[in-house]
Length: 501
Ligand SMILES: *Cc1c(COP(=O)(O)O)cnc(C)c1O
Image (cartoon, rainbow, N blue to C red; front, top):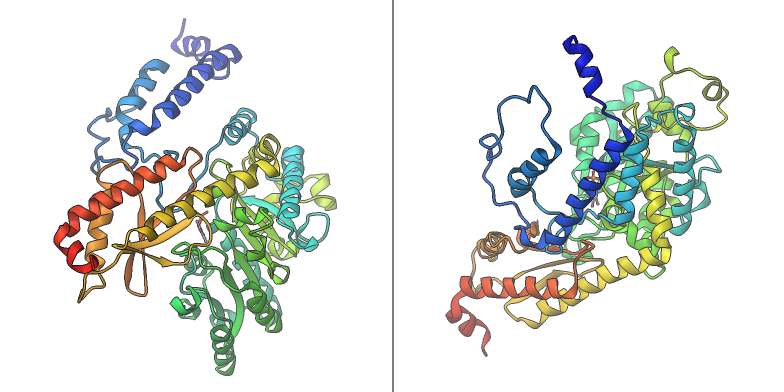
């Protein structure tokens, strides 16, 4: 037998029975991982480059066994994993997993379609339109955002991609009117709390970096963008011959979950013919609960709206939901029509081709996992899940408030608590070193993982709740670590002199 023949007879990469057998083993492996997840340090404690020392420097010539690979994952890979699904993960913003989301990923990987146009997998396009209409309804978005009109929803990988595609659509919409020479005069607006994704989008979009205005916010508005500051900036720019074209408001900023006043900002955008985008990447999920929906009041005036179902809505990464009112603006910026993709349905324009709503051509069948999450949990299940995350945050906040050595720095709105150790008297640096030391010392325990931000020059600890396995006991245990480490850092003398009276 020639060696090629031998390979053909041995390598059966999609044998259904082998899939069943190995798939079961993998599910067992993952289920065991979840059972033991609290035994790992939440924040991986390895040093950069650790893995190269543990793995061979070339790929194997002949196949390894699944068991050997799983053993290596257990012994060599897992120590270098930061466990985002650990109940003790409180860093950044959460990135939810769920059984429904996991099963959705499985079926999506199982079918492994590449649904760039309707014909390339009709159900992929149609299910995506339907589930995004379902969610538009759950969020009470205005009718213009539904796919049954001139708009519609699309699943992007991340909020960054969503922001980029709408910025390009807005840019090209105004350049069609004013001519391409206007590009260096285009001005975009957002608060200084906007996510860095906007800056990246402006860079990619070829905009004048000096004209990507990040308008100053402060504690007086709880770090939300003030409409008068925006109005002033726009007037000034118009007076100097510049062309305002894009406004990004944030509902739930990354540093402190500040909520920009959408109704007032939307009015200004409309008056000035500016594309109005609302970034609710993290907080959008909470708005499926009636009691939080008011945070996106004013979305009626928006041209586009984005939220990440993968942050707080139990849909495994990645699943960023973008709605636009005028899909033709996106399509005019992003469509191509090469011969090799032409087909009758696309030519007749009877339904949409999502390749024209995004950067890449190829796209995963992500609507399946969103459908699984919506159907297996129901809107009520998701609402109560999100409410419980926020309840845990309220609980954490109450613990912070009770310990006079600490203070809550910005008002809690959703499931993020921003707090810090009160600076010692006469502290030159606002107690920043103290709080940085506290962060490092808490994270080095491996028992919790949190991150920080800086607001008005103050170093602030962010405690972001949202992992599905987190319960009140984890919050209490985490708080105990903060208190112990604070005592170790402050020493009793500081504590006594500053606070005992
Ligand atoms: C998380 C987040 C982003 C960026 O998210 P990606 O999906 O990773 O690009 C943008 N804006 C806000 C408000 C966020 O919370």
